[in-house]
Amino acid sequence: MKKYKLLYFVSEDEYFLSHKLDQAKSALNNNYEIMIISNFSTHEDEIKSHGFKTAKLNFDRKSINPLKEIFCFLKFLLIFKNFKPDIIQSIALKPILYSSVLSFLFAKKTKMIFCVVGLGYLFINKNILTKFIKKIYLLTIKFFICKKKSIFVFQNTDDLRIFKKHKVLTSVTTEIIRGSGVNTNFFKKKNVTKIYDLIFHSRLLYDKGILELMKAIEELKKKKISLNVLILGNPDEKNRSSIKKEQINNWEKKKLILWKPRVKKVLPYIQKSKISILPSYREGLPKSLLEAASCELPLISTNVAGCREICVDNFNGILVKSKDYISLSRAIKRLVQSPNLIRKYGKNGRILVEKNFSTKIISKKFLKLYQKSLLK
Image 1 (tube, one colour):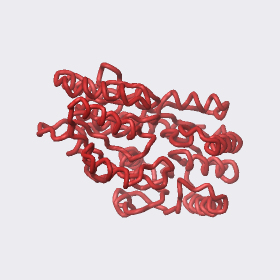
Image 2 (image 1 turned 135 degrees about the vertical axis):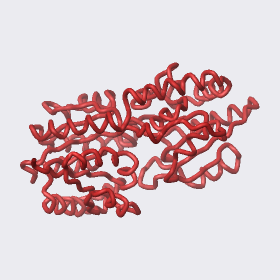
Image 3 (image 1 turned 90 degrees about the vertical axis):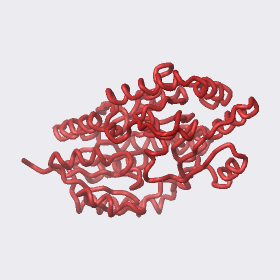
Image 4 (image 1 turned 90 degrees about the horizontal axis):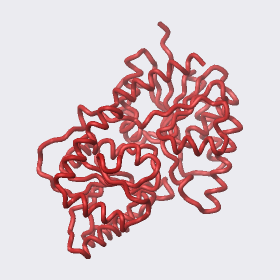
C-alpha cells in the first residue's frame, strides 16, 4: 500500500495543537506521512513527539509587505520541493493564498485542500483599506486556483455563500465539515464547585465581542447583579483587532472580570464555570463553544455565522443580536437566574456535540476527503 505524503500548512503551532492534532494523528495512523509547516514558537518539539515532521516558516499573518511575502513564499516553495507532498491542506486565509499560487505555478500533481476556518478581520472590518485588500485577495485566489486539483472546505454555509458570491468557486469542489471537532472523552462534565458564572475563553479581539460583554456586565452591575466572569485568553498582536493589555487590566481593576492569560489546560476552568459566552461578530465554528458544550455548559452567543452552528437558540443556549450589549445582558440575566435552564441546555449541548462534532466524526470526514482528493 502506497504511503501518501500530507502537508499541513497552519499559521501558528499552537493552533495546530488545539485544533488539528487529533485529525493529523488519525491520518498518521492511516498510513500518511505528515509534515507540519508553521511559524513555530514553543511547540515544535511537542508536535514532533507525535511522529510528525516539521518545517519552520517565518510567517506573519499581519504582514502585507510584498518583499517580505515573496521571501516567505520562496521558503514555502523550497519546503514543498524537498517534501514533495501528495496533498497540501492549507488552513486559514493566508496559507490558502500561498498554496493557491504554488499550485498554479509549480505543483502539477499535488492535490490542494483549502480550509476556510473563519473569515475574520478581513471580512468583518468595513474600512476602505480592508475592503481593497479583501478584493485583491479574492481576485488572486480566483486567478491562481487550480480547479481540477482543489477542494474548498468550509465550516459553515455562510462562509461558503460569500465565496460563491464573489465567484471564487466556479467549477471548484466544495465541502462542509463543521469545525475541527472536540475530544468528548476528555472534555466532559465533572462534579466540582462552580466558581465562575461566565467563562469567555478565546483570543482577546474586538471581533469576539468583548466590548459588548463588558458593557453587558456593567449594565447588570447597575441592576445589582454581580457576576464572577472569567476571561481566559491572550491578546493577539498579529491580529489588527487585538485588545490592548492595558484595556484588559483596566477592566480587571474595575472588578468587571478576572483575567487569566491563556493556559495549556483549559478544561478545569470550563468545568468550574456555569455558562460559556462568546458574543463574536463572526466565526468559522468556535472551538471554545464546542469544548464548553461538551462539558455540559449552556451557551450564550451571537446569531452570526459559525456561532449559530453550535449554539442552537432555546435548545442548548441563547442567541442574541451581534453588537447588542442590551440583549446580551438580558440573556445573561435570564440564564444565571435559572438553574433548571442551565442544566437543560447543558445536557442538550452534550448530546449535540456527541452526535455532530466529536473529533472521531470530524477526523473520519477528513480521511474520506483525502481519499477523494487523491482520485481527482
